[in-house]
Length: 273
Image (cartoon, rainbow, N blue to C red; front, side, top):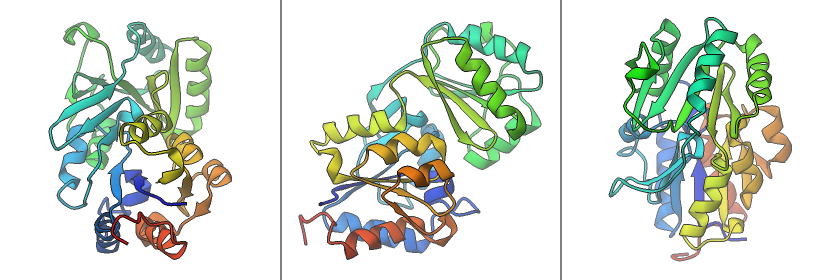
């Protein structure tokens, strides 16, 4: 096996408890890239929430954003692939608000995150992801166009009920839990795993040459489909079931540990080896 592309989740994986990239992770990624490897991020975040990190880590392959709904070459800002939710997603958003009073809704539309409405819990989300949400009072105030993604923030004890309820509506979308209190609605065929396969194909790489590392359920398909799937020590138990290897927790330089594992096994990209 030779790993030529390493794809990492951000929150709970590459970033530590304070939302920082450790020097150990940064140096290991730089070393991997010097050996001829490609490194990128797969995240539920949008462009604006990723840009501040790009001068701290050597990303040299297109990014997977919005949990898989968009692939972007940040060097040129070219969107290489994207998908949108069906128009009926607007009706779903309103129906969820009626069925689950107090749910917090963030809509991703034309590169902007909208809080519908703005709440204290959305404010906490802004601080966590480092991106501002524009307040929205009515869906009718949005510019024409389809949604890229919907994020619902709800109490952990209600998240399973919300997930079941949304799935029962029968809309042609995918519902993914990305944190203990985050439930995301993304286009069908637009998970991180789907876009990992698209990115590998674009780079002319077999999936056997791709390693992926993550921590939460939105990383499940990515880890399952990669040639070498890694769950961090703090990962959801379901990820550990499908992972090829379990790294130390994210607070202990998980990405650096993954790269060290690749080096020990002789799987590092061999262009300059």
